[in-house]
Length: 440
Ligand code: PMP
Image 1 (cartoon, helix red, strand yellow):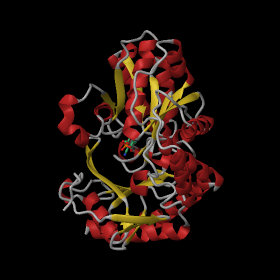
Image 2 (spheres, protein in one colour):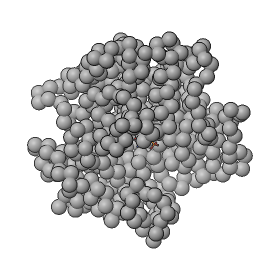
Image 3 (cartoon, helix red, strand yellow):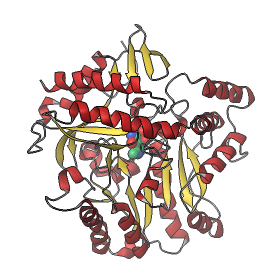
Image 4 (cartoon, protein in one colour):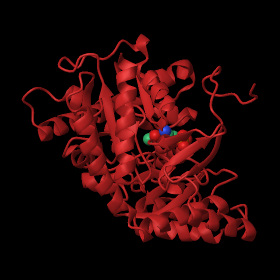
């Protein structure tokens, strides 16, 4: 009997009792390899002694101070660190408690930026059909996941969705990756022209699409063309790196690999590695200047912004990643894991695509590999993979249902950055068994 309203109302979940390294343990003592870091959260794994020590020290010093009265040291230090490592043009940081809050704040920054600049007619948000940006009403409206939006449709602000950059399903036969990337990006310009460029506020996208698609990176050249289109029409580029950012793809920010810098970027999950809830908006100098030279305030705020415990945890997580050279391990172990996935699933009858970057990898499961025909959604293959994996002591993040107007089942892997070869091999071995059991 539980008094918690869980997402699956009748689910009976194991009770998490502890965690160490890449494993979590339930109350009965069963161990699970956390191959998805929860939802791409636990980048340092569990029970990291340095982060725990930093948290204890901060708890002794100061747990909370409201930002309308005081700033605090961990928040200042974390902001300095994030700006120092940020893409070009980013000058300030706004701390919140998670990914949805970060995207909600970023959307309001984009809107207020144009109000400050005397362009209040800019109100249209364009995003992609295959996307998830959060579960608050504003971010839910922005995301393109039809299934998540459905019950709340009448409450959602008007937003506009274009096709994603999704080579596995949308690249035409004979079309090069570059040609496809440019064609996919053109959808943004077409939409901006249709709406009237003077009405468009922001384009929102995940550089590597996570929860709705199973680690889909954009085709080469896509984001560079997107950046050009945004610049041409004065539209802000908001990159949602809540899931794919903070080292997950092998560089600090995923967009580095696409050769673009955003006007606004959101990060969360891997920022605090799950040791505390935290998210952040990284904003460009031009946005800061518009606020500073205009009304002099950002018309927003939550009680827990810049929370000292959350910022201290994130600061420690980020220091450990740098000190231990973990981005190099993400690249090395990402390549190793990818190699093992290719060996195990490269010729699998029900695995249509293996993709991703760094330790952010996905499988697309299909009924028929050659026709790419998805499974009948009634079979709930993604949910079965999750169940079979849990039975084998493996946590993977599944997604399925109606995505991008198409059916699909995906498995997302986002293991901790401390992964070693033995851990990667164990993940693939258990996943191989789980997938076979699920599609049987
Ligand atoms: N954006 C992306 C890309 C995400 O993956 C998520 C969470 N899955 C969110 C936003 C929302 O973050 P949160 O759940 O922390 O509110």
